[in-house]
Image (cartoon, rainbow, N blue to C red; front, top):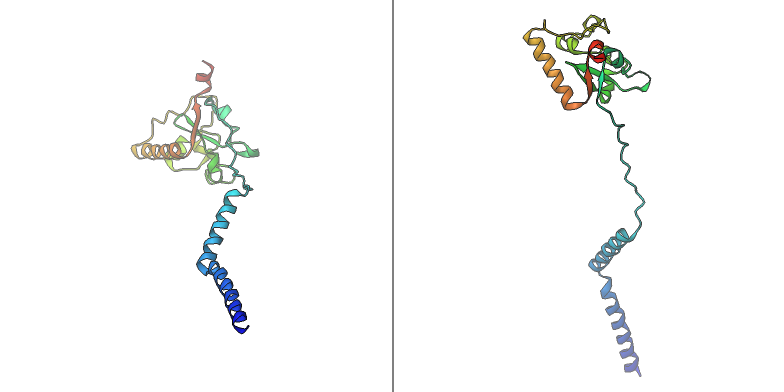
Length: 172
């Protein structure tokens, strides 16, 4: 009987060892990877991609000094400024061109002369809003180059939203 019991014990031990072959570290790791992959593929996606809202559409318009003036960034309005007759929406640079910024006096105005002269003084801005636009004919080559540099910077960073004309040209 001892032999039979010994043989049965060996066979039982053999079944346990054979069943443990599946539980090697490599098999456990591969099984975990497969289970995670299946879970990741089959689980419902909870995240929704939220993109920032599109900015409101801006229609290209013709502005006069009077109609451009309200776009100075106050009360949450957009910030526009004009350079050589082209109106730029500089709202993305509100920290610079909006209220409290270093260039705030150019907001809602024709900034051509001030930018060309590297001056933030009020005297650089057109005083007579009903008169003709500043022809900028008295600028020297250095000032023209500076103004062109500013214009190129605005073109690369901001949208052109219109053109600036005098009141007399607008009424024609």
